[in-house]
Amino acid sequence: MLLLLLLWLFLLQFLLLSILILFHSLQTQPKAIMRNLVRRYVTQEQRKSENEGVTEDDVNEIKNDISAFRFG
Image (cartoon, rainbow, N blue to C red; front, side, top):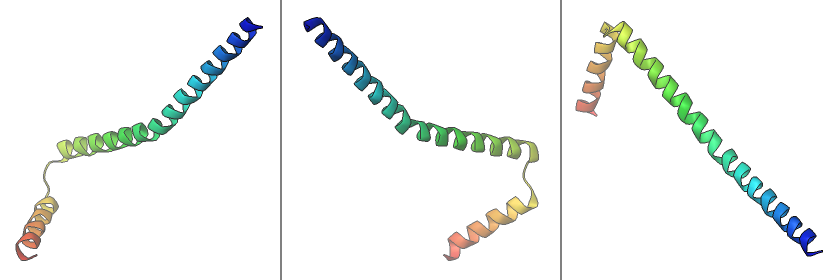
């Protein structure tokens, strides 16, 4: 009888631990996915900028930003 009770307690403890681990992984998974998506996007944009160089539109955009800071 005591052995059966100890076995049930062990199984209950194992199940509770498994549920806690699963709950923790479900909470952290969306953060990791979002972090990877942002990292992928930033890397992609950096590669684009390395291949293209600076265009006239980029220079005009910077001029407009500077003017906005000066008069804003």
